Image (cartoon, rainbow, N blue to C red; front, side, top):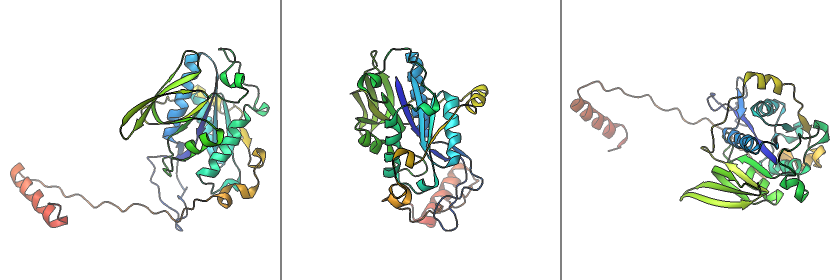
Length: 287
């Protein structure tokens, strides 16, 4: 079974993030970078499916600068079999629509001979092989925590001509590996949907608990090859990617206002309650 996971490298959610002086982007100085948490759920689910089947291939794909290769190394250490890095200075400023087009071309290419032949499937011909395609299931996070666009996965499904299931918190594969049953979180509750493969799903928090790769796996991942692709490799010219082709513009970033200090009330419960009520009335007309 061929599984593809689309990843994005984002600033560590525990980091102190500030914009550049011109407010054009996040200041990268001193930041640590991680796999987008929602994408990590997608990756873990793909690896678990491969483990349950006893075979298959998990390919991690990302669009990003050179530093994004570390996210792919982490994916390999967790259990991905291959990694594809779409990169180049011409991609700077790509919006979700451009990113989805790049990913669609890369995913449609299938395994590359440059990164070696895929490991043999232990479950016989995959659905992808039987239909002449390159994948059986594509998994993405529901959104990236740095921009909250929540668009790339859905746009990618459109480009690939796939049905998509969003905000998945539980995913079951049929015994013949030809359909999936997904529990999708919605505003109205949980919706249970069955879908034929190939398909695309976006992962929600709660789908699983991502593993921590062992030290030996991390060391081995450093030696594994990464396939690197440019926009030209995928058939795009410079004016078809990056800021030049993007319809979404970031006008500026700013840090949220700092919260005011708290006031500690030290008194007997009845007196503390009266003082709290007085402060709420005088400070902001809360009551």
